[in-house]
Amino acid sequence: MNMRWSLDELYSSFDSKEFSDDLKTCYNLVDTLKKWSNENLSSEDNAKEKLELYLQKEIELNNLFSKLASFASLTSAVDAKNEEALKILDKLQSKSTELTKPEVNFKMWLGRLDNLDDIISSSRFLSKHKFYIKEIANKAKYMLSENEEVLISKMSNTGSKAWSKLQNVISSTLLVDINIDGEEKELPLPVVRNMAYDKDSKVRKTAYDAELKSYKKIEESSAAALNGIKGEVITLCEKRGYKSPLEETLIKSRMDEETLTAMLTAIKESLPHFHKYYKRKAKLLGHKNGLPFYDLFAPMGDVEMKFTYEEARNYIVKNFSTFSDKLANFADNAFECRWIDAEPRNGKRGGAFCSNLNPIGESRILANFNGSFSNMTTLAHELGHGYHGACLKDETILNSSYTMPVAETASIFCETIVTNAALKEASKEESFGILESSIQSYGQVIVDIYSRFLFESKLFERREDHALSVKELKEIMVEAQKEAYGDGLDHNYLHPYMWANKPHYYYAGLNFYNFPYAFGELFAKGLYAEYLKRGDDFVKEYDTLLAATGKNNIVDVTKMMAIDVHSVDFWRSSLNLIKEKIDEFISLSNDM
Image (cartoon, rainbow, N blue to C red; front, side, top):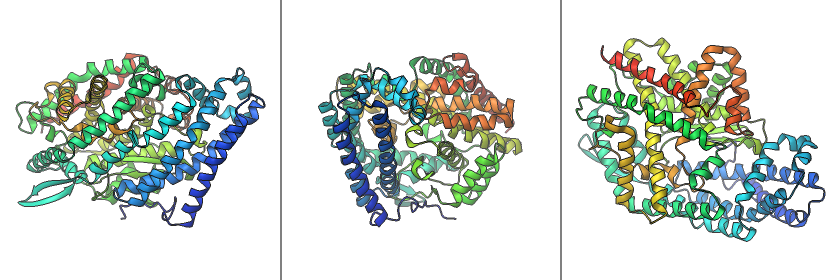
């Protein structure tokens, strides 16, 4: 079965006539929008017609730009040295800076309209995009002058975006020196990191040591990139009037601080229960001082749950069908139509992601599949993202962009479906392995995410004063891991280079890309509990919920399911579901 995706549905190649024509059209649309905004946004006359026309032009341009940029970025994701992809991305980024002036003009013009609500209500098209329009108007207060915004946009191409590109290239092309069965090899970083799931403890330890050693090759470059990006973020936040990068992230996430505080309060309360799990796993693996980092992902149980790619497909589709045929058919189609690139190889970036391609109503999923149960659930996770996109495909591109916290809802919901369906059919030995793998995953999105939140908070705090050295970055990462994992981990074997491994730290527009994972995990747990109560009636409402995420704030989205995210008790109730799994695992471990 083919484990590489097809991008032909976007374009056959960079040399194709379709790509060339669309690139030319995109450039012309940018020029047209620039000219139109200069000529039409100096007065508030005919406001309804101007607002409609601007949004229609924006939809057309965004659709085209999205196709072009997606083709280039997806090509680069599996071939980091593809010069044509990098060149196109650079050209598109450069051209996109020309949109800064018309965008600033539009936002300022929108802010001058006294009767915006009346204008929106007078048009069906505008009413359909009410949330989008109002959100722009509310964010206008954080804008700088036209000249400043244009300059910032242009300079980011040689600032944060350039640093991000550098980090992507050096991490994607990093080869790890490792000794496998007495043979010295150079292997891609994703391949070595996947060895953390190996059944052989010696392989896990060897991979961990080799991985940490390999970061020496890129630590100074990575630190420079991180300091450059975060320094730019701090400068712009202060200049725009945000209290902090966290406040900016919350506003962009359509989430309020009350929600975040409630969730973090419940998470902190739950940490001792996770520590209990880590210590039990450590004991089962023969460790006395807590679990070493290299055994965090060690598979447990006598039953080795391994999957071929074809078996993973069948397993996911079968279990998705326990929720709905629509979800199962979506996943089966994604495999059949080659929407997934699952093969680890040199030059391909690590980890996993899903890119929803609204202009063509499809998705593309990147994974690094090695056959483990965890890798199988990762495929289910990313297919959840794709299903979220499918629920939004009938929305315009302006109404299809959801924020980070709700972005994880469908993906983790799909993980829960697969895991719970598997547990129903499992023997005691299989249940033990599945439970451990699930709790292992929960630990990543609750405990490890909390450590990343602590790290990034401290990083921003110190970056305001000075650029951090490699030594200092390693120290605050270790301290964050100690605080989150407590005595559950062996403090002699942590991961001081996690800041060099996670690409999210290197995107100036994606600060604090950590707590959204916890939100998604716990919100999905609450939704799944509702599904168990309500059965088939829930399924249609769930699809409606996903379709609404592009045009509502988080509080209003969650209210659709009668959930109060300001309540610490809601988060506690979701975490209690995980605690029950931990207790069940510990109980089973007594019999193993």
